[in-house]
Image (tube, rainbow, N blue to C red; front, side, top):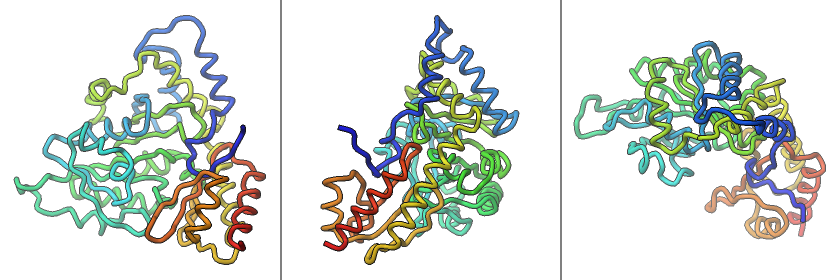
Length: 343
């Protein structure tokens, strides 16, 4: 039975252009571990988008990308500053701590976005042997709460972090949605604002399973190949991972997919805002809509549609739209919410 969900953009299928790229890559033999034509193509495409200094290292998943990227910056006694809601803190099963051995210094932020003042909360006790030393700030674009840093916000934050002697990692699982929502090219929220290293997301934007660590600060590049291998993120048949990212970066497929997902989120927002009793407290900058509805309504809706209860204390839920969400999907979901709210 075909069904539609609003739980995660990971629920969506693979874009046909990505599947076609995988099929094209499945022709004959190719050198393993990244010495193949698809990975060379990806290197060129990523430099077209992010600048000539970009070095790209495909990996299997977002957790792996984040762990490898953060390891490349931090020495064993150093720590990562992140938002309390950051994916590396709440949704990666402790991988940054268990695999990379990193201390996470978290900061509560209401909208999911770090500020210079938030970073300063943990910019203390420098040189104190009793405290893990802060080395990197990780930001998520778009954030776990569906919000996005403006170019100016991100630039000011990076400048502040660099002034403190730290580097900046960007968790870009939904970087395409952020760029599409802001109406800017990918480099405007990465290279141009001084991001040091990027976890580039493809899976949530139409890939089958493809992410990448993209080094933008050349001083970090030497360590990444070794860390990728020791973190079990080196694909032997890498051409099939690279081919997916090549497809996304060709003919603006990344932008088309993200713009569509964002547009469906705006349609969903408009629909639920017209329903009495539905409370939307957060901005919708990308492809996520957060709303507060009665818990009994949530339970009834979840028997028909899959979505997550985000905050058990408040009853806030999260609805995600994807590259393949249709207007009919959204309108049907809105109708179901209206029906259950009036029941």
